[in-house]
Picture 1: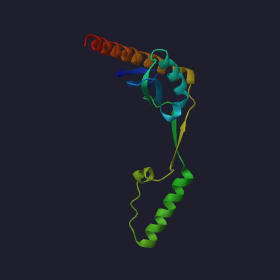
Picture 2: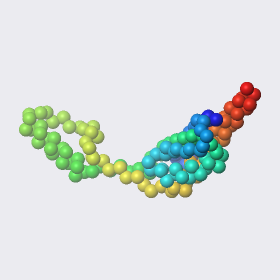
Picture 3: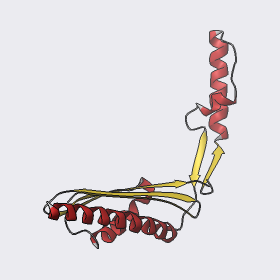
Length: 154
């Protein structure tokens, strides 16, 4: 049977979205789409979903948004910016161009900023993902049961 379940939660400064969908299939086939930094959750999600779903082609998508921004530090790569500015000014002088460099010019420079992500507590993330996924799974199962009842009535 086909099915769909979706749950959205905000837990601990992060926003979680889990969607579970399936299409008919004789066997159980699982596919997860977590963000790259949360790939370690794929097997855990597979085990969680397998407890409730025994057949069908199941796809789970996960989105995690850090809404407080506390896990990311952004710093200016000063040497790179300085080299860019010097090269741009030299090119301006050589070709007779006006020097109109602004702060926004720096934003367009490749590698001008270093983005460093702080370590996160994997168990804390899994706990929130699990809670959200269980709610989505409950909605998914309810939808399949409703579909089953309709098929039975037909």
